[in-house]
Each structure stands twice: as structure tokens, then as C-alpha cells.
Length: 109
Image (cartoon, rainbow, N blue to C red; front, side, top):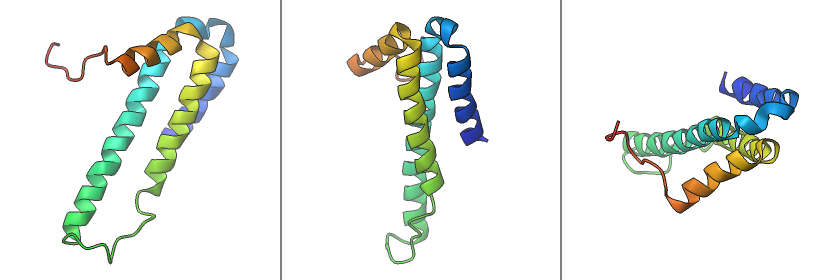
């Protein structure tokens, strides 16, 4: 379902190109949160797998979380498409995250 949703996001951005500049920040925020969540899920799955196998690498399946890694790469590709189609607001979102000017947790909410 996630692959379909991200694929449809690209189609939506292409079809709604004239107004996408107004929504660039929102779309980019969601794509970046998807990428971050995927990276955290890969790390958690790797830790769980290592604990199950008692820290040994002998029984690990290297393809086990490859679908999640492909999803992260596809979301990164979609973010690059968003950066091109959505213009300044998408770029501003990336710049804000690069500079660290964002909430890292939800305690303030």
C-alpha cells in the first residue's frame, strides 16, 4: 500500500503541477517523515533480528527488510521530484531541516 501511495503522490504532483508550489512544504514534510520512519523501522528490525539470533550473523536473512529499504529509496526519489515540482516551499523545508530548525519531539505540543 505504501508503494502505491507514494507512486500516486508523484502522479498527483505531476497532474496538479500549476498549484503544487502552494503545497510543497506539506508534501515534503510528509515524505521526509516517511523516510525517517522507514529508517527507524530498519534499525529496529535489525536490532530485533540480532537479539533473536543471539548476536550471531549466521542465520540472518539479508533480504528480510529489503522491501523497506526499497520503500525508503522510492520515497527519497519522490522527495526529489517534489523538490523540483513544488519549488521554493519544498526547498525551504529541506533547508530548515538541514539547519536543525524544527521540533525533534512533541513535548511542546
